[in-house]
Length: 262
Ligand code: PGA
Image (tube, rainbow, N blue to C red; front, side, top):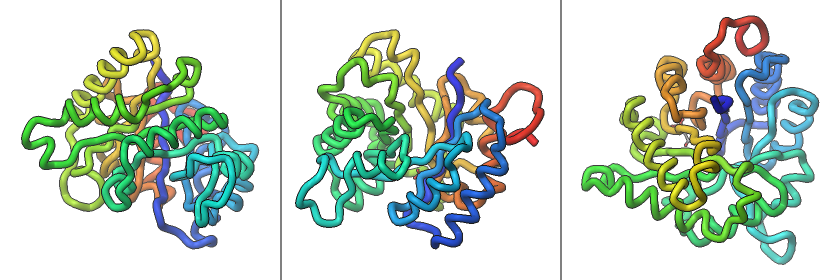
């Protein structure tokens, strides 16, 4: 069975003080329990300070975006090398807020995915349909297109460092909609099949597919215990250490001992 991953996407939230407190509480809560992989993705200005707190712990540092160039005249942008330099292991790319609010295309996201992987970062590529697309049965074609275009030209040796986050746009945030565990599982199966058609069966069986969209402690176990749901990408609930740790604990199935499971 693939190990479950729980990733906190802090989005554009926290002050330096809040970031420090949140990161310390998560590090303490995880302790030396490695049964679930945990990562935190703070905003850019706090990456270095959160990175120092996570250093030497089992909690990985991640970023929420990057620009697909090594360096240069790109005012306001952040390169993969800079992220590595401050200790990032992973980067979230293609988030629906960037696709919809900032107009990122699949082609641009693809450039980012390739730049991140070739620099040595792990990538969580977010894909997901809108409510209107789901209503007219376009979920499968939308996910397919986002995968095909987002992953174009990827070298097979980079695939082990890639995870997909299925984030139905209609279930993100406080909009009131929530995907059922069955809806999540069905979409994850579509994603795995489509990935298999692109890269072969073996990489598709090894692929981690996370779910994101209003994951809360109450709903986490039912989701994370579904087969094919390899973890969760958490927005709102990741801003509260107790809630975030409770979701991480929900990913553990064996008897509890210490750390995350305490
Ligand atoms: P949410 O966000 O948990 O607040 O719905 C998830 C995400 O956008 O990654």
